[in-house]
Length: 116
Length: 114
Image 1 (cartoon, rainbow over the protein chains, first blue to last red):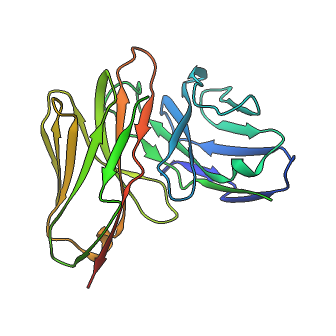
Image 2: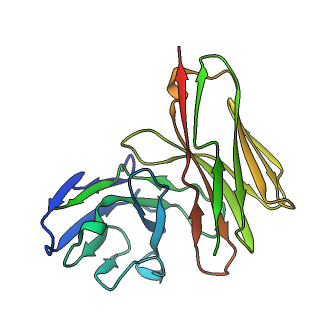
């Protein structure tokens, strides 16, 4: 595709609801990343995939957060029993090759999650 | 804990002027340092990427410098344009073989006035 796309762009959830955020990376990109960006802050790393393998999930804030990329392309970030502190923009990025290199990461526009 | 500190927090300049943004980090072991531009409501866009051995990298009117000894980087913007108004984020990655853990700064908000 032309770029990284994310859906939905905006999501409002009631506290306690489960949400699923989708990321479509650039076709053929090996690495995929999820970040959380609170208002007025820089993004914070959540998790990273190389193809379908989740190589690092050290940034996931709790066991309510779960990410998958079953076929090595589209990824879904799921948040169970949402809390108000989960309100943030969730950014997805992809890169062509192994993340440890200096490969450029291409970011999607993000999903703004608001938990009421 | 790895940290990336950026200064100033915000900056207002007139169109056509130059400016320099600063980034100090404590990330170790160091892998690479990236500068991103983030427009409001959009995802970050990569400007420059530098490894340990590089001390300067240019991308059009953007020039980044890196001093790995003092763990400092700067982003210099020449002849600013209105479209340069955005948040500029410094990101430093650890070299942890096989794993990728970037640390983001909070960004410098730049406003360019006509």
